[in-house]
Image (cartoon, rainbow, N blue to C red; front, side, top):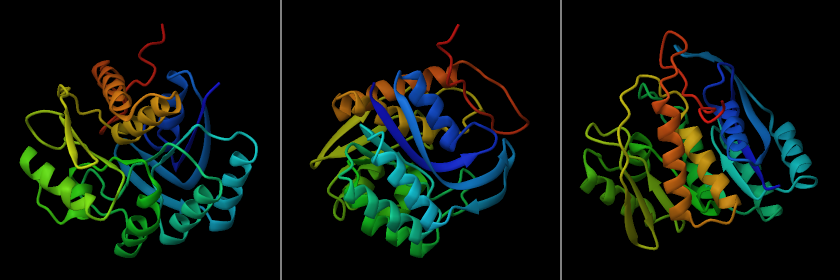
Length: 260
């Protein structure tokens, strides 16, 4: 059985982070392992507390996985500080990890920054260079590129600017644009657009986690990056379209829509 390692924070409400990743990986028929970077107290209304993992325990978690159940792909989500970012990069390089998908969790849906400028710089310098693909949303791509993104033309401009300092592929997610949910893949100086239908729902908690995990699943199976993205988008759309409505705020999607 193929395996995927998710490196991310724990979401007590189950809609995002480690919990969303494990659900996604399981529903793709793969075995999920995890390395938890932080515990969060949160629900559909917001985050009330965060307890970060120590670098020492984070390293031990990674060592335990790679020396026993070596992953076919790695998904990286929330990493709260520079030291944790450095530990992850060092261990992934040490074990020659493959198929690394980095979801640069930098900006909350509310617009609040989740990473300090120091941690953001460390992310760019030590973690982005070893990822096969990064999956920023529009606010995150704006931070990475310095570009104000309002449409597809500025999405492409931003991707090209990010590519000046990063040799891997960039999947710039267009979900924050009003008209549709079309994403841009910029790889090897070539642009490819993935058209997606906008699902009319307020329950979008964990969409970024879910998409990046699904991409990692398809890469673990040996599929091309383009096909992995296409299949991951289809899975995400179905999970959103199911219409799960839990909680009082921005609720989760139904990762298990295919179960009867």
